[in-house]
Length: 71
Image 1 (cartoon, rainbow, N blue to C red):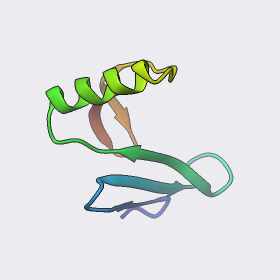
Image 2 (cartoon, rainbow, N blue to C red):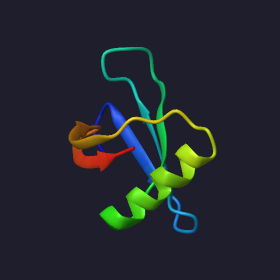
Image 3 (cartoon, rainbow, N blue to C red):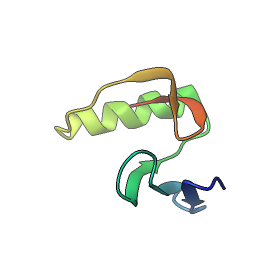
Image 4 (cartoon, rainbow, N blue to C red):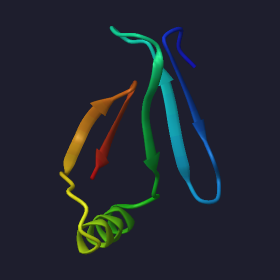
């Protein structure tokens, strides 16, 4: 936990959410579904796109004190 950021992770399903006040008013920063591998991320991305969701991919992106791949 950081002074300007807090993150929580549920185990099943793996959902994380964060509260932040980094440079703006305090509040919900993001909500995410977390996977353990790149193939799982690719499968989740394909499911979202097949359902009509507009997504964009980010590789090795820095976000909320971590570096990760996202979709």
